[in-house]
Length: 126
Picture 1: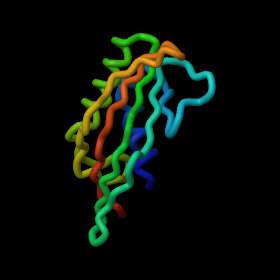
Picture 2 (picture 1 turned 60 degrees about the vertical axis):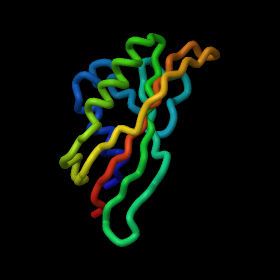
Picture 3 (picture 1 turned 180 degrees about the vertical axis):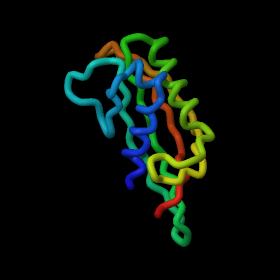
């Protein structure tokens, strides 16, 4: 079970996120001509222990919106959902979600607010 798909499913199960973005949580990059607000996420490192079945990859969740406040609220909802998360995430045993930091940006060419938030997701590889 790929942690990447389980992360998406988990975030879509949170009403505060789903009510704002619908199903617009995209692995990798946003599609061409997306509807905003939207979230894109990708794995930015794939670290795992070599002698025990525990992985701790780092993921970046990028929130895009035409409204700064909306982008900030969505980024905070993601942080609230993943920071210190422990439990079964769709069959993947997550040991700990660790917030690694975030950065606020404005993309003047697209007129979009972009908030990038990074997490380390520590989980058991089965």
